[in-house]
Length: 83
Length: 158
Image (tube, rainbow over all chains, first blue to last red; front, side, top):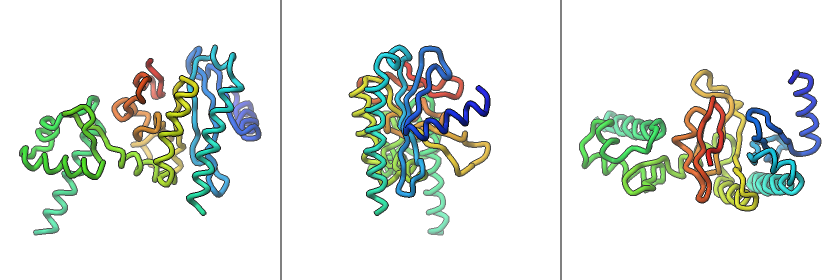
C-alpha cells in the first residue's frame, strides 16, 4: 500500500467512525476497529474485533454495529469521568 | 538504616514483579523465592502482601501471575485508568456477542525508546501486554483460546 492510499484509508475510517482491515497481515484474518474518544475528542484507544475474513464478508454490518456500540459505551464512560 | 531497608524492600518488590512479568510460564512460589534469593518465610510475606494489593494473583493454586492492579496501572498510563473496571466487561460482552476475539489497542505516544514497541494490545481487557510479552501476560478469557505472539503481532490461537 502506498502512503497516499494509507492516508486516504485513515481519513475514510475517521469519517466513518470505524475501520475495517481485510487480510492485512494474514490470509483469512481480518479486523474491525472503532475508537474510544476521550472528553477532548481524541482517540484514546481502539476496540478491535479479530475474525475470519469469511465471517467479515457475511456479517460485516452487524459485527461493525456491535464494535461501534462497545466503543461508544466506553467513550461515554471516558467523558463521564472527566466531568 | 531504615532507608536502606526500605530501598531493599522496594527493590525486592520490583524484582518479583519483573520476574513474574518476564516469565514464559507463571512461576511457582518456590521458583520465585529461589530467583529472588530470599528465604521462604520472607518470600511468603512478600507475595502475600503483593497478592493482597492485587499486584500479583495466584490463579492456579501455586503459580503467580500479574494481578488486576497492574492492569489498572497500565491503563492509567494511557488515561484509561478511570474506566478500567468497565473495559473487561465490555470486551467480554463483545466476545460473547460475536464469538470472536476482542482486543483493546493503545498507541504509545510517550516514546520510550528501544525498550518498548510503539503500540500494545490489551487482550480481552484482562492484563496489560506489550507485543513482546503478550503471551505470558494475557490469560485467555474463559471459552476462548490463548493469545500468542507471532512475528510481533498478536494472533489468536484457538
